[in-house]
Image (cartoon, rainbow, N blue to C red; front, top):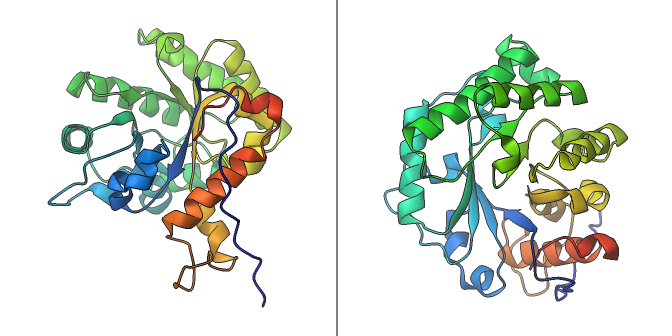
Length: 278
């Protein structure tokens, strides 16, 4: 089967020099120290399990966010296999040794049906555990940039999760950024857009986990930040970049940069004005 051509490397069109961030997901810790990402000011996102247990860590040349790997944990095991103490200690090490960490996601509990079937718990149970994770991690190391996450599936459930934080003394409108969970797989639906519009109108600076092109075209102007590794799957179905000798660019930084620029350039112009990208 013939594969479609790889994206051409185009320069990023700039519309503003303020406010929003689009993190490029990667499985390779070495990307944190690659000069092209620092030179182009491309922020990266990498999961805890990709860094855990390494004797030496890269020194970051660009801002990055730590993903806790929650979907993998709960979809495979139905629980978190490492404690808050272990995760907080690891995040502290990454913060100190890698540097330039923007935010670190908490050990939240997703609320998709497939996750609930793995844990055997209710949405409300997952919300309580999510809020507890933020409180526990803040207690263990309040100086780290923990990002609280709101979980649910319906709009009312997300609002209830916000209330749970408030009952615990946490005003999410005062947080630098708040993750919104369990919308990744329905990000281009009217329901997901309505949820994000409502939460944005309440003054929350939202981070969208795993947001792809179709989702960003609808809500990029409402998100403070987002992350995506969609470029890697996209590369599997395309030819390698010109000059690349590997069979697939699914782990190729050259492809990832080209994909990201092309994706961001495709956003509606009026919404790019509200999106900081590089």
